[in-house]
Length: 489
Ligand code: NAP
Ligand code: MG
Image (cartoon, rainbow, N blue to C red; front, side, top):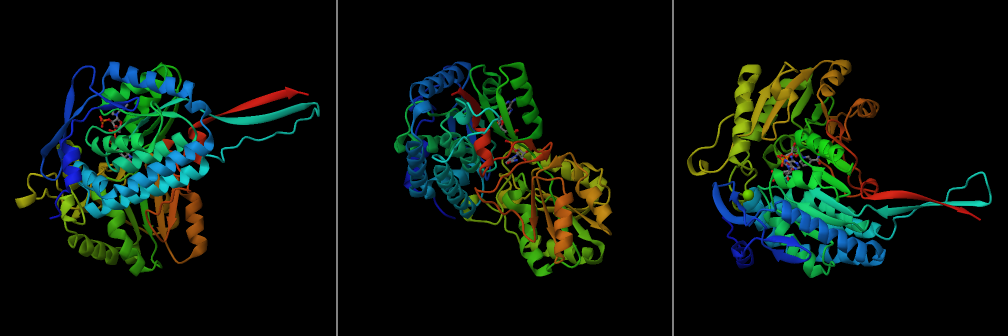
């Protein structure tokens, strides 16, 4: 098993405070919480918890920084800061990946890939910083000049989940900072550590005090941010249930802008004419990547009836070959994030046993993995599309596989949940591929592939999978507001 580096060990031993105004500060209440290694259930360290006084102090620092300088910082300077931060993440990628690996549980090589993706994201938005343009709009009256400006919102709170802790933070910070906002990042309570390490890099990169704060905490901290009257926007990634609370908090406070990247229950559709070799290379990862803790997980597999048995057999064989273990042992799959998540996933598996046929898996891992939160990758053959394991996001390594006989039946099943985040279709018939792509109610459709991402391509949900699109040019709309200026000549 890979050992932690000295740099990681010394980071873990340091006191974990809040990051406000480029300073490490103790929490007003003195409260802290434990973060745990999900591979063995042991405490890693304690982290200061941000309460009301800390949220107020962070908002105050952000507001002052925005008014005093960030508002008028040149686009070139914003770009340079983002490039510098990208360089520092690249320099410390090994430490950050180790931190992510023990705090979240994911395999080390996957954590490294996360860091590379974070670097690419920052570089992409550094490129946008000096290209955020308004327009000159011709109107009927030639004696009137109208132009638009795209202005930063001001103070934005960024609330993120635990499944890709640093990547989710960067997906939000990069466009928000490129647009010239001041940010308050709240990592998930299960995974606060990479965000705190990032805070150190933000200071080292030379961001002015107050441009970024990091406030570890729990749902209460998130609620304080989403109800705050001096926060202009909340950018949120997480569950649909909490997303709805954030919208309600906006309505109950200052009508702050809200963008939401929420849950999913994505269909992965395999037609009989698909290249089965390529399907096979992708399918097991579409089903179980990140131990199923992925918003775009292809958790509902639909296979044309003529090839159904063959695909079930191939997926089962490939799933049996997956190795589970602590992230530092570089397995295929790490543990679930917490005991609570373990219980939740086991409850769904219990329900699944009464609703569908268990094909494979279903048990908690024993022996040397018994202290961690490991569940076997699990496959159910599910005919009943109204069952809980087909309708609800489980967020664990549990998938259903269902045959279909024609396109109408397929589309009614594929579109038959409240979610609409991602989807995929496998076929060699290009007309059918595009026809299905047009009919699917999802923010992304992959054809003959799965889980392809790029910072330039918009990402977000239909239906209850969210509001707004992150990534690409679209994210600039999430972190700016448009002003029309009329000039009577
Ligand atoms: P979650 O329970 O909704 O939590 C997400 C974040 O919201 C955490 O930081 C959480 O804090 C905070 N929070 C909890 N209650 C809050 C409240 N009342 N007000 C404000 N903030 C609050 O989600 P999760 O379990 O961490 O993550 C899994 C979910 O994220 C899944 O549904 C998944 O599909 C979704 N997700 C979506 C995307 C996407 O791009 N669409 C990407 C990744 C994940 P604490 O955890 O500290 O309590
Ligand atoms: Mg943890």
